[in-house]
Image 1 (cartoon, helix red, strand yellow):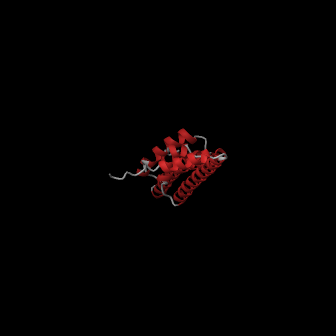
Image 2 (image 1 turned 90 degrees about the vertical axis):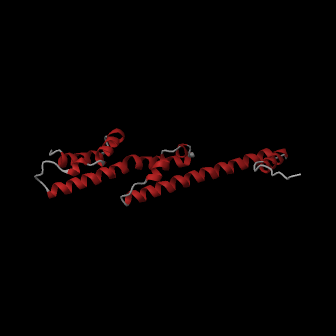
Length: 163
């Protein structure tokens, strides 16, 4: 007769049943449950911190933190434990403000450099940047009153609108 293997959950299930059967099993199960919760909480914190550090590093280098920002909008980030929530919130702010602000800043800097080279040009190719309208839409929607954004919009208008 062929031997069959037990599903992976059978042995742990029997172990838990044996512990529960003990007089003080309930206390032990609760203690184990608390340790599991603490471990999950620590893992959530560590994962959020890792993504935040990677995003900050990418932004500092002028790169797009695609993976960390994708994670920030995921169900995993939404379900992170309480102790991870401040880090997740900081990551989300970085992704919604600093990343598009970096794009808009690069577009503005390029337009300013082009205007410096061609002060009398009626229009500049750099003022037709694809980066600017995408960043502008997102920043106007999510961070319209952010001082860094309002200052950058004024710089853009001065260079690209002749204002």
